[in-house]
View 1 (spheres, chains in turn red, brown):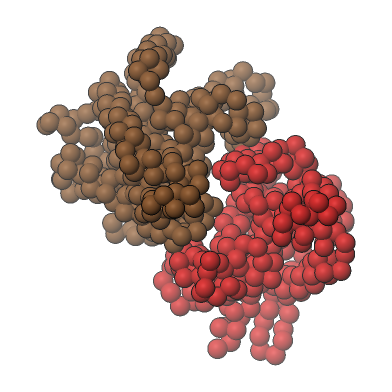
View 2: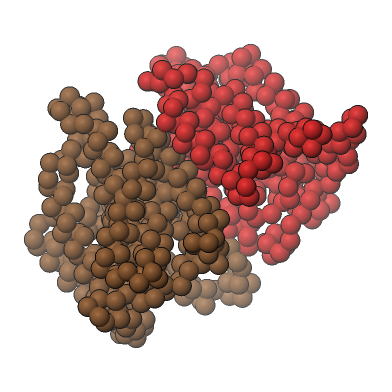
Length: 288
Length: 313
């Protein structure tokens, strides 16, 4: 029983990371109708940037983490300004190829740093263990869960209570009418990419205590992608909940099913979900 | 595609092959030609799905892999190659149908998601089903046997793969002119209007994935013979995107485009290795150079030539 509880909590922690990456997919998709295939690379870059600033340049960890998230967000905005805005209104294939190409460039750039390829690293972030009753919890897991709750609250506040958040919501309802109502569409697109990139970097920092920092840590985005789709692709709470769900199911599958099944569970659920709930879990079976 | 254009592309391919033989030596040039023709055949599958029917396939490499593994397993069980290749094509076609099934009513981007998920499942299954696929260790594939002869010389391999490509292109040209081809283009342009004209869009899209899968499956079967060794990671996400890129470079809607796209995709690593020799020390040795250049080529082509290299501006 105790083992199950611990596995469940580690599933929730990993699910929070899936949920955050899924949130970044959905943020970008809602505002610009493009699916980003570079979120994994942005996540990896964010973690490596914090690591480099902390270990390489000797910054305090908090400052390094903050700078890494802000820098990745700026990079996302720059990508939008230079390249990604040309994909708006074009076939989906254009954005898919563009983001994949940009992701390859990021990956290659990190791989060019010899120190990044040779080893895996840990961030000295919440490394201690917490004992609650009989259950032993890793500090990293608690940190991830707490941070995810905080980010979800901040995002809700941003979308409900600020004019910019309102403008982003209007844009995702109907871009043309939003433009007529005075929403600066181009600037909002830049903002959406910056938010999406920053959120991915943040997810990378939170993933660091759970796994390691290495070149392939971006693969986690491939599992977050089903979460975004299962959540309906346009629902922020849906993405977070679906991420949590996938994390828990994956952890349970790892406990009960044969080796290897755990890794395909998100994809099998994605296919099953599309088949049964074409408009996302939230919309029920009615579909469209 | 008019007759003059076809002659021009035949002549320019022959001239290109001649130049390559002069530059690299006959064996290397012929093996590269084999690779280009096989890539182009696999890319034709993407051209059908993306260019003709206007959908997205992000997992085409898995279908190539299904074809390759089916061929390898059947040939190892001493089934004749000529019998095994149609089975490989059928397996990949069934895979294409299965991959597209969940998104059949949603279309567009959702096909991308379901084919991507399918491809990741196939890759994991090939790794884990060790008794049959030997997992990550991979399978050795014997040479292709045609009419009692082993096709293992570079010249005969090139001949077989170019013949297969031309055959597939002729078949596709016929298909695109048929009722089904017109249905695909109608669905691509406007699904609602196509539906109103009596075309069944769900059926048309499904058949695009079936035909595309079969083409990629044949390419996979040939590829397994040419390379002589297959393992799951050869058919991963990167290969899927290479095929997508290939179709895009070639101008997704043109048949001949697949061949030009394949030429570019095969040439990029070669160009990078030339570049590596030319660049000074530190930069040339860096592990990420190839990835950066490949990504930059994708971004540049998409931004500068949005309709593909063959499509003009």
